[in-house]
Image (cartoon, rainbow, N blue to C red; front, top):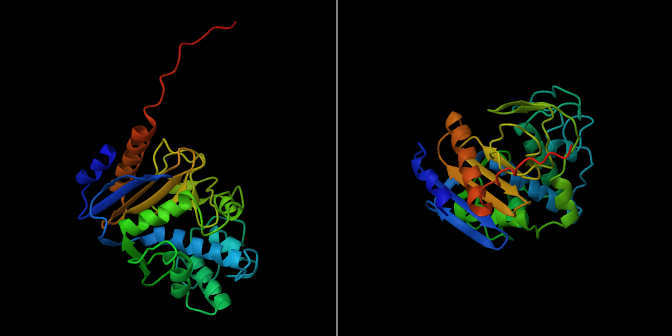
Length: 283
């Protein structure tokens, strides 16, 4: 895929990227076996493990978890009121603000571990990594940000998000729909959105202006980016996913490079946007 050549010009030590459709990989660039820190793309894997736990009856999405008044659903949707990081008290009542929270995902993993009666890293491996043959991917710390793995494994994970097998169609549809609609919040490193729509662990594209996934992804697109210069988005409308891994910290370079790459990928797959037709005066 010609669009992926863009990563060769990125000012990063190392980069790898891939595009896939429902029938398989459409193109790959870079070393697919090099292990990267996925940073907050980790949250997608933690969220999927939680959805598996919900279907297995290990947890209930609406059971209490986190601060008083919060549930697993609140934690997944960054609506529990917990701060970005740390063990401090909540800074808002559950369900009133979208506060992006690593602490919330750590509380989420703790809740799953208690109910499953096993460490969360073991549950994540059994529920997600092993079924998807992600043999070189592992959790090395926080379930919010410390999964490490290669592009080849992340492609397998993206394929699962394009055509879920680990959870039901109904569960996945719920996970990729807005939870607690209308909540405003700040997307770290980018800025405030009102609303900042989120699903059950998945950031939703919706109508956000200036989105990191570019201007051509549909409102149905979902995914996540990470502070280590990583991203994964899935757009169900054209049936395309794009993943990219780097080892340069997220910054302005990413906000310029990622949308350009994403737009080029979708233009190559779908063709250019049609020119507007001639205006017809029906008066």
